[in-house]
Structures are given as C-alpha cells and as structure tokens.
Length: 380
Image 1 (cartoon, rainbow, N blue to C red):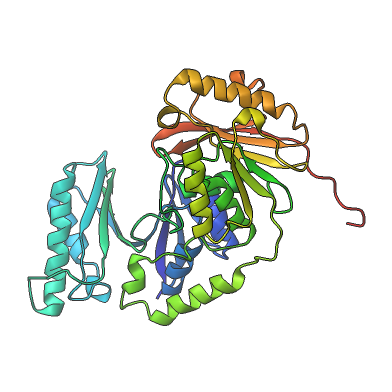
Image 2 (cartoon, one colour):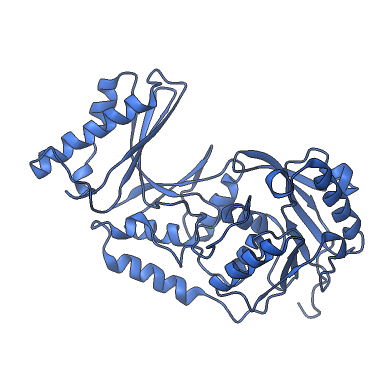
C-alpha cells in the first residue's frame, strides 16, 4: 500500500523538514507552505513519527477534491475507503479549517465530514451508532481556495512532545524549534555547544539527542501504534531500528546555564528523564558570567523575553550583556532566536545571516553570527 504522507511544519522550517526526510531516505519530497509531502507505506508512518525532529505531526492524505457546496464535500468524503482504516470501535473526531473558500463555516464542514464518514462506515458495519471507545483517528478537513483536502492524523499529541519533559517553565521553547536551531547551525558533536539562557534545557537536550542519533519519538506512543491496519511488528521493527541506531559512545561537550534556579531544576529533571544527565552540564549562572569551555564552539540560545523575563528593560539588559560576553569568545559562533527587533543593535553587531521563524505564533529572527570553523586535522 503506497500512501501520500504529509509532515506538517512550522512556518519557515519546511526546508529543514524536507532535508530530514531526504536524510531518512525519502526521494519524492515536495515542499508546500506549512507541510512537506512524501510517499511511503505503513512502515513509513512509524519511521517518520519516530525520527522527525522538526515536524509537528505526520498525516495521511486521504483525498483532495473541489468542494464549493456541502454536497460536494459530503460525496467526496464518503467516497474515501474509511472502512480500510477505521474499525467499528474507532474514535474519529473531525477537526477543520477554511481559508478563501465558499464553505467558510468550519463547524458546518466538520459536521458534514463526520456524517459522510458515519454513512460510509454504516455500510460496512451494519450500524449507524458507533461507541467510539477504541483507537483514535483524528480526521481533518482543510479547505483552501474551494479545494478540500481530507487527512488522517497518525501522530496524536504533537511531535514536540518527546516524553522527557515532565515539568515546564513559564514559556518553554518547543523541542521541534530547538532541534531546528541546532540543525540550522553548523554545530557538529565534536564541537562544544553552550546555551546561556537554557531555561528548561531544551536546546542542550535536543543537541545531545542529535549527536547520539537518538530518535526523538523513541520514548513516546502515537495514535497509529494502536491501529489494527498497521501490524504490531511494523512498530517493533521501527523501534528496534531506532534503538540500534543510537551512538552513545560519542563524547559530548554540551552545557547550559540560566539565572533562574527553578529553570535549572526543571532542566536537570528533563536531562535525567532523557538519560542525558551525565552528558550535559547545567548550572545557575547569569549571562555576564558565562565562560564556556573550549574553542570553535556554538552558542545556540533563545534569549528570554515577554513571559520569561517580565519587562522589556530586563530583556534589553540581557541582550546587551550577552553581546558583551560574546566578545571574549572570538572563535565561537552564535545563533540566537528572538522576536526583539533591536537585537542586533543591543547585541553590538550585525548578524551574518538572519532567518525568519515562528516560535509558536511569535514572529522571530534566528540571528546567526558565524565564527571560524575548527582547523582540520593534519592528514585529512
């Protein structure tokens, strides 16, 4: 069975998600706004959910068709072979969104899609009443320019929920964004990495997982791992492959600090839960006293703002102090994600590169200050 799969993406990270998929061996990768399409079988549902670090979730594209009337939406949805996926006890809520389409009422569209699926399943199971107390199948109807796309969510809770974070700080950086920041930097595991505003430790933990090739979904479950249509052995094989791929013999030089002791407590708990507490050095320290060890390292950070800091004056002081401290690290590279428009001015220099990204719904820039690369070893 060949499926059209969709890896959804935060705005600005589509190319990163596409690169991840290509590195996993998928060749027919197509980038669209907010999503990346690729083909695969049921085994690829398991692999993509386990391995994708920067995607939000993995969907199955069930159908796409014009829908300017409720009748068209109903018939197009009913034509899908839902009985091949959803068992009689399956739970199948419907979510939706509509943009620039005549069918603009999302609740009405959700109701039509739900009725169409019920009618189709009623033919197979001989009943029009479904208890919906079994595996979960979240159906979504996307309407854009009068074209309806119907998808089935294989993931469940978003892929940023890795399973290692039990506690959270006030405004934690999503794990998917932290992983993207590491992948967008030029960092390699043999180089030091430091986060002077580490908060709950997400960037150091994600970096360590990347360095050791730990599949980000290895510690969690997904909606589709309970689906009868996907044999249990598919998930067992995918998890075995992920376990066998871990490279925990690589020495790491990863550290982080934060001025807030409560944040460091949360970070230490998360690192322990991820099995990385011995590999990541975390301490309470103001940015003015940061002194990362080594040369040719990368500072990758999300300086505090808004909820995490309280007011703009404190944010300005933090960025200025970060800039001053960076002057003593002439061989290091710096990557800072911030919504602060005057970041470069207060940091003290213009970035070599800027990339617009969205941290949740907050528009940010990834400010990139590229230091020298480590010298190559003789004999290479």
